[in-house]
Image 1 (cartoon, one colour):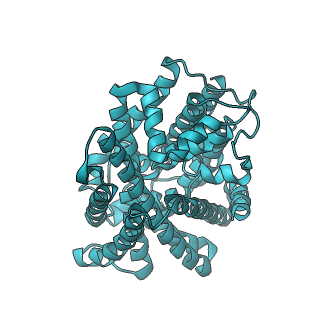
Image 2 (cartoon, one colour; image 1 turned 135 degrees about the vertical axis):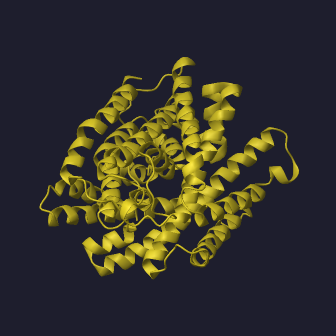
Image 3 (cartoon, helix red, strand yellow; image 1 turned 120 degrees about the vertical axis):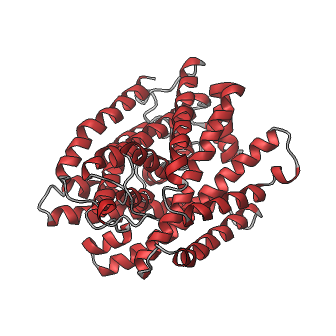
Length: 445
């Protein structure tokens, strides 16, 4: 339990201390922001700071800090260290610089930013990487909640169409199309604050359930070993598995969305660094639940492995049921369903904007948005429906998503290092985590 509390305190302290150092290194000022300068009424518009934070948190907090953290707990409480230090020194730094570099370049997509600081060849690589990753994220975050809703309906006694994963998947994809097509204030700006409250309550409910129901979180110092039942090595598998809970390249595709809606550069610390620290806390809670709720047998996380073998949806449901019982499980499952959906819709939106920047297609008209929405959602629908019908394995999609995700983070950190080098600032603050992630991505591949 003390390990968990120490890591929690480090995450909170890291926001104020190291987050302040990162902000000072970048040096935000009072220049006119893209939201004020461009303001096209679709993607560029000023939003209140609290909405910026909530939208950014929900954009980045998909299934990664939940399912990824649960899967990471297979290695035991040592995963707490990666979530904590990965968030403070890598993930939050990555999110802050991806957002602020976009802010300094008219709200450009991360692929265009990479081209500015790493050259034309890398720009083209990043364009492909970004679009592929975003479509995969959208697919993963459509299939996941569809499975969760199906599970809830089945356990509630529903039959027929409501017990069909394909039905819920199609419904989610229709919503994704609408959210991708409309201006950012129409749906995302209005409903995300409500969803954000559900997400926070869900995480707090799981945490309180661990403590009030007598579960014991194992200490790092008593279990400082690889507890994975299959003996899968920590390097580099754990660092890839716990993607969004420590560092995620996907976040760099989302940060420009909020960079286009900020009134002042000085909001970046709270919006970008703060949202990632919040996600790290969510991941820490779910990793702690994975370590505490399931029995360690012969020094291995056998109980958790058995729970995960029953399926992603079933494992999350089981955690919610054990920590909050029948009363709290409904709210918790709503939070878990909302989490991926609010990342999936902005993933497809980011894919549209990345293609728009790439192909130089203005997005202020309905026709131009349709030209990009239809093919982007079409590919996502093909992959998602293929999974629902049993043709495409979800774990394979997740595996490639995870590697692509962390490789994108590596490239963005190198772009940030080059930015700081050209500005004659402390580039080591991004070059060190960039080097680490380079080693992780290469060895995993």
